[in-house]
Length: 205
Image 1 (cartoon, rainbow, N blue to C red):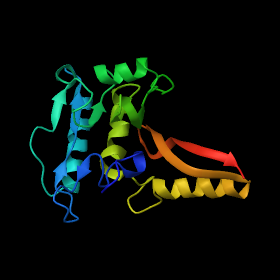
Image 2: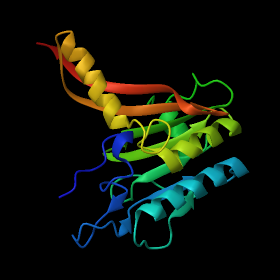
Image 3: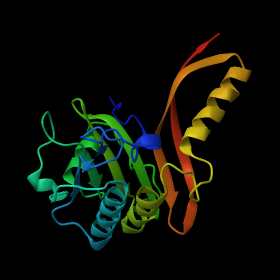
Image 4: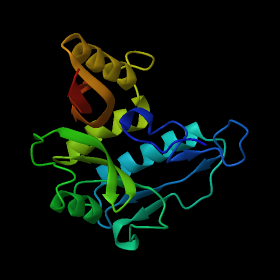
């Protein structure tokens, strides 16, 4: 069995959003709903379209009905995993209220890509939103085109960053059994990651 996606490093691997339902080793289903604000701006829709294209690229088949609006979704048990796009998305706002996502620290032109493992009960969510419309577009490109790579395709990956962090800590006598890449911040006009948040389960040797 394939483990559920656990962070940004594996959201586009077989797991939560991309599934092999007949066990032949090939992704053949998209298990997701891309949710945009009911009154979303063009930047929200562009970001959602790019993410849908990436999911389609990674899968050999899918059942139509991939996109919807926030007013038509009630997250929870039985609902497919969600990809939430746009700052004004009511579900993103709910996560902000619950302190599971923070857009307040973003500067104009910055966008966040965040994997929230327990967004709505046990249901995970991927959030792509910006401080403003330019920020959402800034987050769109890496979310749709480059993850799990830090910058260019086939360059350093988020997994390699996790390994380097664990190696750095081990050299200083700090044991880390697991690490997760929870959030990446991008800036308009800059393809490189501006900020990467890595969560650690660490303890002294």
